[in-house]
Amino acid sequence: MKVLVIGSGGREHALCWKIKQSKNVSKIYCAPGNGGTREVAENIDIKPNEIDKLLEFALNNQINLTVVGPEEPLVLGIVDKFEEKGLKIFGPNKEGARLEGSKDFSKMFMEKYNIPTARYKSYTDYDDAISELRKFNYPLVIKADGLCAGKGVVICNSEMEAKKTLKDILVDKEFGDEGKKVVIEEYLDGIEASLLCFVTKDKIIPLESAKDYKKIYDGDLGPNTGGVGCFSPSPLFTNELKGKINNILDRIIDGFKSEKFNFKGILFIGFMIVNGEPNVLEFNVRFGDPETEVVLPRLKSDIIVLFLNTIDGTLNENDLIWDNKPCVTVVLTSSGYPNEYEKGYEISLNEELDNSIILFHNGTKFENTRLVTNGGRVLSITSLGEDIESARDIIYKNIEKIKFQGVNYRKDIGEIN
Ligand code: AMP
Ligand code: GLY
Image (cartoon, rainbow, N blue to C red; front, top):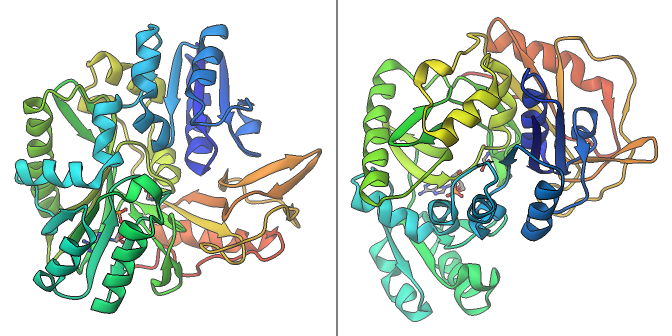
C-alpha cells in the first residue's frame, strides 16, 4: 500500500522509519518532510496546512492511508475532508481535535467528566480577568485558548507578570484570534509524564509511557521548549500509578461516548504527578515530539496494522507488542533555541555513528548534497539499551561525532535522580 505522512519533524521521521518496516507498505510520501524523511520516503513539497493540495495529492496518487503528524491540519478538519472523499486517514476529526485546539473546551470536558486537573476559569474580557486574579495564588498559569505553536502557555510568578500576560494576549492580541479567550489555572508542582494512547471505537489503549525534558538547560532550568530529550518508559509509572491512570482513561472514554465524539487516532495526555496523584495538564490529539522518537523504537508490532485497526474500530490491547528495552533520545538544538536562532549550517559527521544509534532528523534539509540545519531542534540521537543508563552512555559517546555551528544539547537526559 501507499502511505502519505504529513509533517516535517522528528516525529514524522520516526513515523516514516517505523512505517517503512511494515511488510504492507510499498511506498511512503512525506509532506513536506525533512532531510531525514528523504532517506525512507519521497518528500512532497506541500505544507501541512494546505489541506486541499494534500487531498488532491492523495487522490491523484492513490494513497491508501494518510497519517497526520502535527495538530494544525487536524484542527482545520483534514480528517473530515479526506473521509468525505472516501480516503483512509489516521487522526481525529475536527470535533475531536478541539481537545487540543481549545484549552477552554478541553478543561470543560475534564471538569464535566471528573478528570483531575488544575482548578481553572476562562475569560474573554481583560477587566474581568484582572479583577479575578486575586482568586488565584502565585505562581499561576495563563494559557491562550487556541493553537499558538507551543508558545501560548505562560507561568506567572507575580501579579505584575500576570497583568502583563493578560494584556499581551487579550488586549494586544499577541496570538491574534487564538488568544480571544484565556484560561487561568492554578500551578501544579510535580513531575510531568507523557502518555500516548490509541483511541478507537469505545476503547482507549495506552502505549508505553515517556518522560519529556521541556526546559532548555540541564537541571530543568531556562525557558520551555518543544522538548529537548526524552526516554521511555517513565519510571514514575509504577503499578499503583498505572491503576490511578487507568481510572482516568475510563473516565475519558466514558466522556467520549457520552459526548458522541467519534474519536479515532492518538490522544496524548500530558500528566503532572503531584504527590503520587496524576493530574491532566493537557490533551493533544497527535503523537508527541520527541515522545514518538523513543516510543516507536520500542514497538515491535506493525504500525500499519495498528493504524488500520484503529480506523476500523478493531484494535485490541494485545495488538501492541513491546520491546522491554528502554529507549533514550537527546535532541541537538541550534544556538539560541527556543528563542531566535539561525539556520543553514552544514551538518557533518567526523566519525561513523555506532550501529545501535538511530538518528532522527527534526529540522534538517538538503541543499544539493549538503545536509544543513533547518530548525531549532535539529537531530534526535536515539538508542535502545539494556537499561536507561546504558542507552544514555551510547548516546553521549556518539554525540560528539556530529558537528554543526552552534550545536547545543542537554548533558543530563536520562539521569534518574
Ligand atoms: P501545555 O501546553 O498545557 O502542556 O503547557 C506547556 C507546559 O507548561 C507543560 O508541559 C508544563 O510544563 C507547563 N504547565 C502547563 N500547565 C501547568 C500547570 N497548571 N501547572 C504547572 N505547569 C504547567
Ligand atoms: N513533547 C510535547 C509535545 O509534543 O507536545
